[in-house]
Length: 139
Image 1 (cartoon, one colour):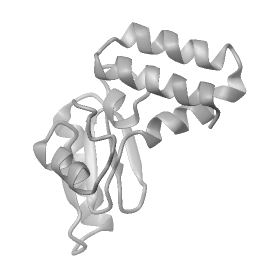
Image 2 (image 1 turned 90 degrees about the horizontal axis):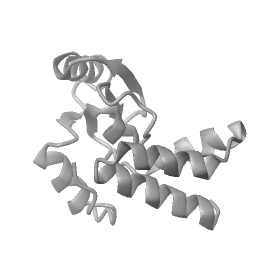
Image 3 (image 1 turned 90 degrees about the vertical axis):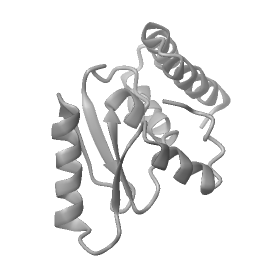
Image 4 (image 1 turned 60 degrees about the vertical axis):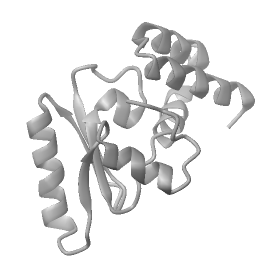
């Protein structure tokens, strides 16, 4: 990742953490400068800023779960740290969490995989305990 891209990722995630969606989108647009080929690498780098520990399925607002300012602010999503499956476009917490739990039951039964919300203390404790230096990101 280039220094400019790294700066853009920091600017975007900082604005998302501050709940400045317009600012995050402006920083995203400035980083890609209209170049469609730059979008996917930036989206991947933003997603990499969200820790999803093995043994957890993390669900919540897609903006938080993916760190992508162009996700629908009302959309829910989940990501699995065990197998890297994901699901998006849920309109309610209940539907998203139920889907995450179904994923665990169907793909991780007896493996001790836990479903946690992005805003849950258990999630933040797990990434802090794991030594994640991004633990300063808060919901």
